[in-house]
Image (cartoon, rainbow, N blue to C red):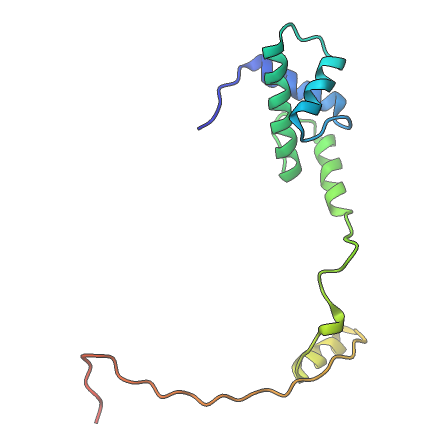
Length: 138
């Protein structure tokens, strides 16, 4: 079930994210400290609500776009995700195996990868037995 947040909390959280996006993280307590340093919030309860909603929005920005937040911030986040290069590739080239078709495809693609060729295993088809209640064809 969703939470009811008033316009003040939502607007303050969005402004906080637009101005101090680089300082904020997905940790509520850290965002709460930053909010008390950079902003003047009249009560602790309101500060916690703003920090909580800002944390919620930051998590949503990491997964996709959020309505009402500057497109510049979202573009930066999208570019950061696209520029990420893992240290270890998920494709292990040392253990690749394939058949003749795979080898031909690699050659057509212009890749000079030498992979061991597996011979295809031909399995015998199992004869289907008639289902219960069905008559055999004679």
